[in-house]
Image (cartoon, rainbow, N blue to C red; front, side, top):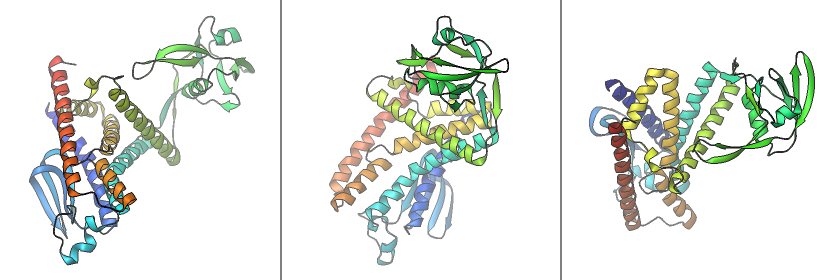
Length: 356
């Protein structure tokens, strides 16, 4: 349990630091004075003042904040501080400062994936046929075990995953496959068939196949810095899409909201990933960072997305949202967040006592 708590604090510390550092960096870029940069809430364990800013480490590690001059429009700003006041900045500057937190969460994920791919490379399955289903399109075309797939529709095939992606995207149209068998090259034309299978959400989907399986033999591919960055961007974008799709499916009822987890679940998973090794823990941090970035962009008052919405309206209309509207909106936002937090804590406790 102690191992999980330590891992939990490390994971949250990294996520919160990058998120708040994004706000801090853009605030300083637009010459906004930052009074406090805090990791955590509540009583301060450690604090140090450098220039205008007090840097703090607080006792509750469930968030953090950057307090800027003029962040609250009701605050009386000294004449000499107006140029450094957040509320006196242009709408687009305020939007960029607020959006920088989630953006830095995405950048953290890209950075982590980059280093993982740079140092670990890729482990891919060789495009060699391990088995052929009877009466499948591949069987009818004469494909046999141990055939090496070289090209599909003129595209070089470097891995099994590469081949599967091309077949999937064929939409059932004929594909020309170039094969190597016992040092002889020949080609076949196959019309992919369909098979009903389940996707990652457990939904039935139609998948295009030709009826072959892999040998399972893998190979390691080293990546140069540009390839590692490309893979990092692809991985980040894939998880962003998957996360947004998961949220949509929870809203429409396709996925049970019981899958949501809170601090207890995160602590348990952080401990498990830490035991599995630094790479597993890093991957877990990247996943959580993406989730944190997306959640903060939801247009809910008190979240970054809610502030961006208000400043966006200000930019379009030229009018600042009234304090009364902001106050009511923030009350609604806080209520929604409290309900969500209570729900994920309930899920965590049910999982904890059910042993699942």
